[in-house]
Image 1 (tube, rainbow, N blue to C red):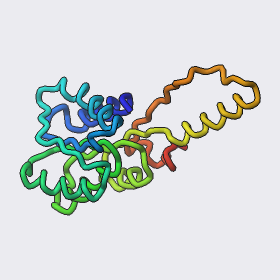
Image 2: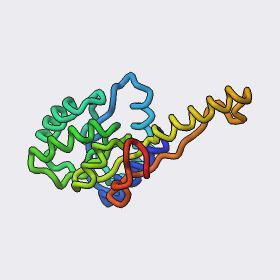
Image 3: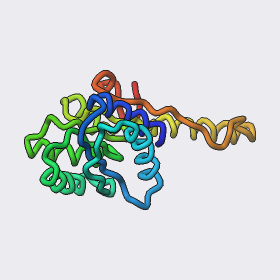
Length: 181
């Protein structure tokens, strides 16, 4: 989560030219992943004094809630340039609200690497997502369970890291069901 968040924040900064007014939509406040992702975003973005966060609200991982929150945020802050969301679902909700308001110029990025985010990126709407390789994680779990059953050991550490992948227009066509093909 942290690695993907920092990668996504770096891309967000690049897309905004390291300056601008932006909004952060976070997942459920009680969810550890929401906090880790937000921390990763801020560890990168907060280093840039010309980046101004004008709103930070929880949309509870919900597309509908993100749409509603984005409508309200946009009324209070009509000059925003970017939205960074804690998951693709909220990013898509925010994007829908922005498009409905005629603000297709706002840079919106999400997190998870969903097919819906891929499709939005390919349409030129969302600009990026961080792929959490759930497909590969499941494969590894099955491979290691099989090895453990057969040999009594996996020979690997209990906790293992999987690299996140930044998904942009350059590689979005290769994304399918949380895996790059």
